[in-house]
Length: 267
Image 1 (cartoon, one colour):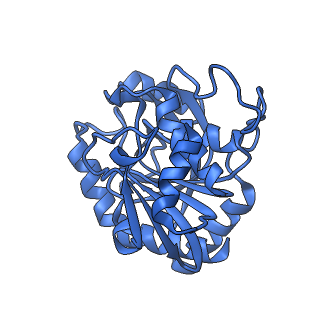
Image 2 (cartoon, helix red, strand yellow):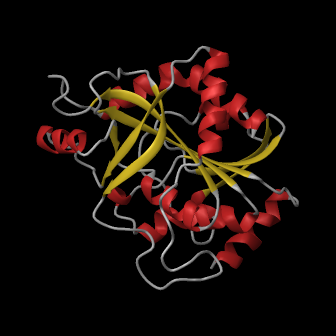
């Protein structure tokens, strides 16, 4: 299936060789709108499934961004959409097969750390997988990675330094933290968020971890950035709504885009 996917994509990419892959989370797809040399809808690509969530356009975008050849997922796929872990991480394996060496994963997340505020950007230093599954379950293909991959440094320290330096230059007060992933689609309960905080989590969401696991497994360097769009359940008395997530992400888009562009220039 990977070869079928590559054959289809390469019909349109004219030997374009991406070196960096970016997964754009909820409300963060504007980067792909601005830098879009050519795009292919997920629904047209063999092996891909379509995104069904507001704020996720659902296409692979190819472009030269900040001097780097980049493939962007404008909208990710989620476990809560009913797709398998294999479905939602398949694009990461395709990126690996295309020659991508570095993956930047972005998401919208709720603040678990009580010092965080909506609009903050958080560099992911580690994660907690509370999704109830792992994308590497099942038969292993040694061409992609080992049966039992090490996960002691999923998020590359050199890339974190690059992001920190970019943040300082842009005068963005970047946070650092641990990302807690649950399956969704319901938001976490106050008790679950309390547990996540006790376990060391700083932000909570419903994505990113499967892609990070597979990218690390495939030998790619990973940088994770969360846009804090709301307070997690129990942190404030406000009810949680997806519309708020999209609204806050849209407000931070310019700052987020500038950070990604500077990171790309320095990778």
